[in-house]
Structure formats: C-alpha cells, structure tokens
Length: 166
Image: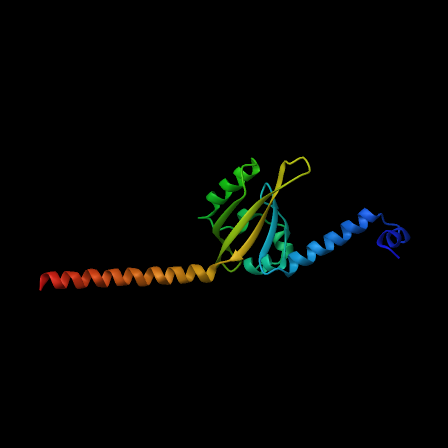
C-alpha cells in the first residue's frame, strides 16, 4: 500500500502525513544534535528549546518556556544582545554573539550563539533561532593564557629594571 493509500485509509491527507513525518524528523534531528537550539519570539520569550540547550543553561524545558532571553542572559551581556535582537526584529540581519548565560546556581556558562531570523510566509520576521555552543572551556583556556602572558611580561619588566640598575 502506498503512503497516499495508507493515509486515505487512516483518514489523513497526503499533505498531513508528510507534515507529520517532517515534524517528526525535524524533532528527532533537533533533539539528537550536540548543540543547543532555541527559538524565541521577537519579545525574547522562549517558544522551543532542545535538550542540549536545557543542559547548557542547566534549566528544565518547562522553566525555560516560562522565561525569556533576558531572564537568563548575564547582565553585562544583555544590552548588546537586546540591541542585536532589535535589529533582527527590524529585519536587518542574522548575527553571531558570544555571551554568558546565568545558571540557577548563579554560575555562568559562556556560549557562542549563531542567531537566525525566522520569517512568516510573507517574509516578515516573527522569531529568532539560536544555535548555541558551550565555549566555557575555550574561555577558561584564553583567560589562563592571558594570565600567563601578563605574568611573563611582568617578569620581563622586573628583569629589565634589575639589568638597567646593575
């Protein structure tokens, strides 16, 4: 029996069957990926988050769907993020941002977000989708390297001062 015949037997149109299959496939992809995926409306309220996103921000899906981006974004990173969302709302562009999310225990996680503007059938922006990668390990390594370089520069200055004086 073909998909069309099978859908007719079950009382579904072929288009509805394809839509269900597509939705199931998309859901499976988004929930099996190793990056976080979140969709928020243009006011910043979460409409969809995958499991990886929940793990990155250390919050359950149900809680995130009651919150918005501003509720979990680090206060120092919020103004720049809101400005970029404002531009996105005006249809200006997709963007990338490195920022911190605040976890419920007060710690923060550094992320790289690749943000895409989603549009309705008429092409009007109606949501943003962020593909989120946890970059906390990289940020810690960069901070350690910067500290090593500062200490090396200080040692070099002290050595030079002793050499000049002696």
